[in-house]
Structure formats: structure tokens, C-alpha cells
Length: 110
Length: 116
Image (cartoon, rainbow over all chains, first blue to last red; front, top):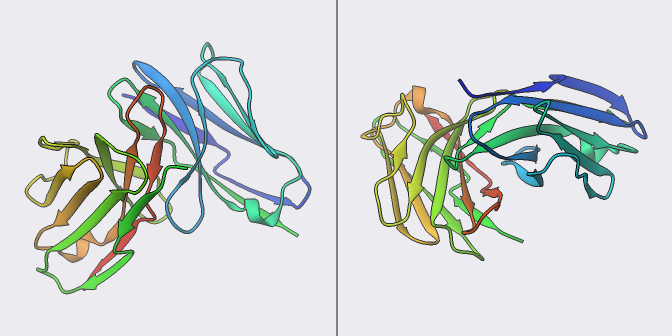
């Protein structure tokens, strides 16, 4: 059965800290891995990763994929209170479906 | 960027009512749209894949007669929860993806459905 596992489940940090969120997967016919940020409403797209070893970067956020070891990490440097959210990892199979992990709840305190 | 609009954002209604939720891709065409359901503090669960001009594909355990999906155009899909009951109360989210390889799904803001 396809599955996506995220860790940690929750994380509490102070502003300025750097965090690393983990996502491992076992999915048949892998096509891509995506990271989303979910605050109060629906998820907003952060990154899509398809190739191993190529870092994607957007401001203080970056992500990388390892297709051999079947995992991805999302890094957030110099965290701010606005980074507080649930971060979702999802894997897209060739069936077009997204399989979501349970998410990591990040809380950043001033 | 790609924008997906979902309406209404909140519905409160009596048991037995049918509720329609609309999902629109505002600045792109979406051959495929997706409907998810999310329970509190849980992740998104795919309910069905909506294909323009054809029948939706439902995930195992999702009642197709209960959750009617129509994808009449390349920018609009609707989900109708028929004869809703309290156990149907949930957060429903749609997504759409632009045509082409390696396009991410973009999500609407969701609809919180409460059945009294």
C-alpha cells in the first residue's frame, strides 16, 4: 500500500531557529513529490521535486529529494511567526493521485 | 499564479439537505480536478478525480450516489452532497492542475460543511 510518512508530527521553535522537516515515502510508480503549507484554509503550493539531488529554493525555504533513499526534506531558515502552519508532503503517482502525509505542525514563537 | 476558487466557504444546513460546492480554475484550464475531504487534525483524503466531459473516478469507500461530481467545463467542477447527514460534516477541498507534465495541484480555499 502506498504511504507517505512525515516527521516530526509537531515542532515548536523560537523565531530565528532553523528547522528541518522530513518526508519518507513508499509509492508505486513515483512521479513527483510536493510540499504544501496549510494555514487555516487549504494548502498552498511550495515546491515540486522530480529529480534527486537538485535543491529547490524559495527565500528562506528549500527542499531536496533523494529518490534512492525515498525521502525529502524541507528546510526553513531564520524562522518567523508567519511560518507557523502545517506542512504537508504529498507524492504523486503516475495515476495523477496525490498521496498525503499526515503533516508536520510547526509553531514559531517570538 | 494558478488560482482555484471554491464556493461557498462555509455551509450550515439541516439534515436531509443537498449541498452543492463549486470549484473553478480562474486563470487556467483544468482537464482534471480533484475532491478531498479533511477531518480535524488529519491529512487530506482523496474522494474522487473529476475528469472534464466524463464520469468521475471515486476512491474506494466513497459513495458515488452520495457525492455527485460534475465536471461540465475545463474550468468548473461541482460536488453535490446529497441528503446530507451530520456524519458528512467535514472540510471539503478541491484542487485543479494545469494540463501538461509535472504541473502541481493548486487548491481552493475549502468549504466547511456543518450538518445539523
